[in-house]
Length: 522
Image 1: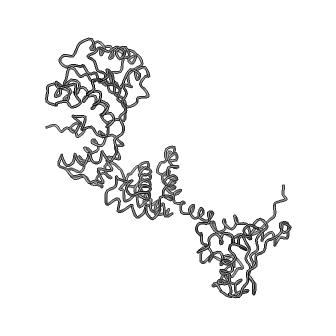
Image 2: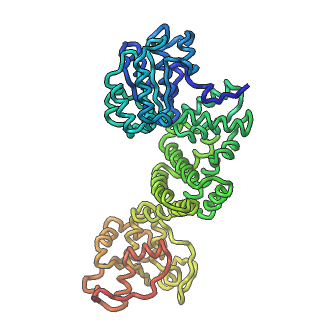
């Protein structure tokens, strides 16, 4: 016995069986029940979403012995013949192979004769956009003045290629891509009826890969049954369709979000060695990021995950948060042109991944600039030549000079609880003598000095006495405008007071080797 593919076995035989085209079905039902069926329809939309199927259902509806009716009986001779494709009063033409003017002339000749038995002779032209210009012109006359017993149904995947003169003479119905969740449920239901097993994750991947086409999904399901028999699992889908496993892609995103470039590249290269296409890896990474965004905003937004997948990905979404994930998704989408234009897609996806690993550094810099959270300097650092590195000392004067720089010690402590004050103190040169902690601000930083002297006076005094000595006083000084053109020592101090320089030193590392005044240079 010849095997019949699932796409034919499960072709809808009633309007209610159609998947995901509620608006189209309701429009045709209303026309059939109200007696307002048009003489010509144009069905447009993605391949495999039901255009030709609905054309046949419409032919059955207008020619059923109980009709015209939105619910044909499926028992009369007309219903049976139309369902089997053997009715003399339903003519199907493929616009790709019957595209010339001679083909349309033959069709026009057929229109002169009344139906052999039924009420209407239904003419279905699939892929009508493939007709030549001359053929369209010949068809136009028939669409303008059709005989009363003729019903045209034109179907196309590229409506923009159909001449406006044809479009204006048809009632146009747009078929939408079917949602992946609807397709997934459909596949699971077919598996139950056909007595084979498919995991929910496998059904979800097939539905997503079909990109809204029910026919494509059923064709993929046939392919997987041929590969794995009556038990289709996630591994079979990954092997046959070349789609990486969800858990692997979550691990990749976790590595990239944590700035772990080595781990991210290792995962990517393993997947590439497994034969997975670089473009698919890019798309799947974006899908995982989108899923994480949905879960971080509202766990009910993401309905396509299985319970096992949700358990894997939800903790990561909660840890990273919606704001960070949204930014990461935006950064990832910016790499789409790189993937599209590159002649080496494997290299392109690795570059895209490496760019995303810089995200933690970007976050730290943004927090520092906003003054919301500290970018703490390392607890230990390599001393510069001639400098001493000793444990922090809570004594004053010489002891303070022997430890890490007084300003570093002060700002490090303030970052924990007083980030705004720490940011202000970073703009000052901090020196400590036997009795006083002196904060010297440049002339341009006078507003910061005023803030420390007034609003933050108690906090800075308490911090200095805790870090250096309980007996130390605090002095706030502001350099006058005349100091800006001073000696080399003053110039070094001015450079040291520059908050942008301090930011660069902390984030990028390094030290100031020399200061040169180029302000008067040409």
